[in-house]
Length: 293
Ligand SMILES: [Mg+2]
Image (tube, rainbow, N blue to C red; front, top):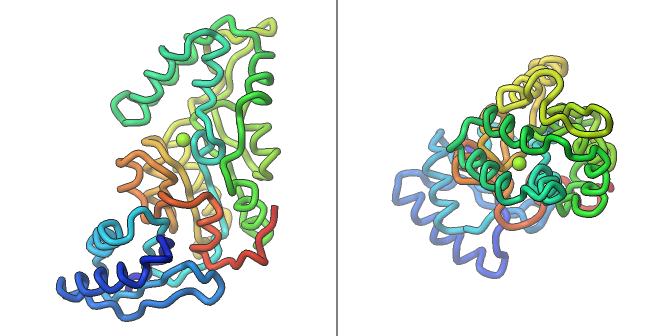
């Protein structure tokens, strides 16, 4: 069985649903159910026998885009674990690009970031190269940059607070830096942070990192490690937008690509292309009266 929950333009929803339903039936995949959720009245739930997730997804994309959706093989549950990327997912910016502005290196660093996120450049070398460009920058510039430019993504606070309210453990995992991620996590309420640590000497960045590199493998390991502690039945939600989120998104119960690059979007079983992060609360069936934050 497949269950898809989706949010799309409500004004045209019925027409779109008729067309999608006809296309699925013609492909030998008739819908068993199509209903709006009681708890979240703008969420459409579709139920389909079988296991043709790719076909269902194609139909959703061709008839309902832009949409927010999750396609699941099991009935939906509030997750026990939430693991999220930071840059362009929990915050609206790419920290290293913003920081580069302070060093007058924005174009050089942004070009490397973009290639890395498209999966064209090995993450580790891209990161090492970018950090190297930051050598001699005052550590104090980070706090200024954070205060002036870094803002939570719309819905981030409500998402984290509400999941925590329902007993979900929350972890921020970033290929970016603790200098940014620690205060962002504290602000949004995440319980654990895993990221890269910029080396500092005499109040200036050295251009190097301290400790092991946090990359896509780290994100997956952190998620699996946290899940193991929660027990075999634990349900996970992961969100991210870039290439280094792919293993985490692909292995989560609900892996949701947030305004993501195409490669990350296609690796995930969910996506947000339309609303803000509270779309996830709706897709999980948590009514607005139960939201926190
Ligand atoms: Mg990101």
